Amino acid sequence: MSQSQILIDPNEAQRIEKNIILHGIYYHPTGYHPNPKSLRDACKKESHRFCLSECKNFLEDQESYQTNKTSLKYIPRVSYGLKVAKAFRKVYGDQNNPLTWPKLLQCDNGREWMGETSRLMQDHDITIWVIGLYSHRGTAIVERFNQTLLKILYKIQYAVESISSDPELMRA
Image (cartoon, rainbow, N blue to C red; front, side, top):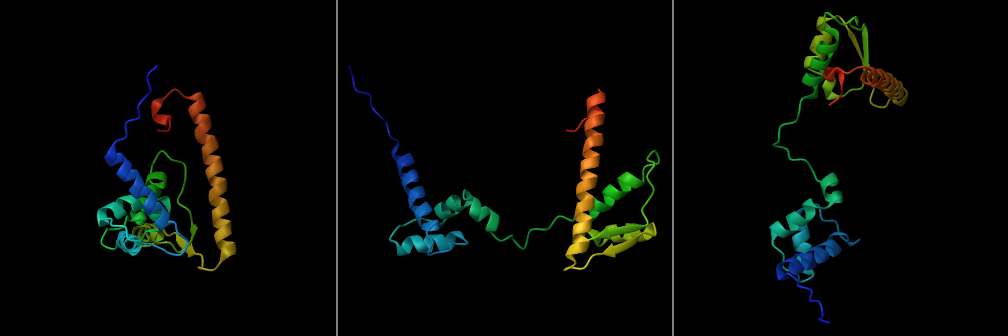
């Protein structure tokens, strides 16, 4: 009976070894490495030589790095105000829709209520009531209403899907 052989790719073995070393340094409780350069410098202190790209590739695979890394300042932000205004127009601007524009809109002080959405509300004589930053009760009322509305809309959507065979009424 012949013995089986295990073939080990030297490049893969080296990659795994580097990953183990980087993992040990990154998750060591005495240091915090918010960027690849900091991690590379910590590796140098422990006499390991890794290039910056290796440290960057390792960090990109770490969930804790992805969730805590700072956002880049030169990337344009998405304007939620335009999306919110478009959604209001879609819901209340439809002639076949029996809903009427509200008289009062209670919201937090988020940016999605500024700009286009604010102008749209002024055009339809809607009062915007902005809850204060530290008004936990007011925020709780709005969040509870949103949760209740979501449950009602989900039940309606589920009922429509269960009795209809129209593919346009189905969720994607």
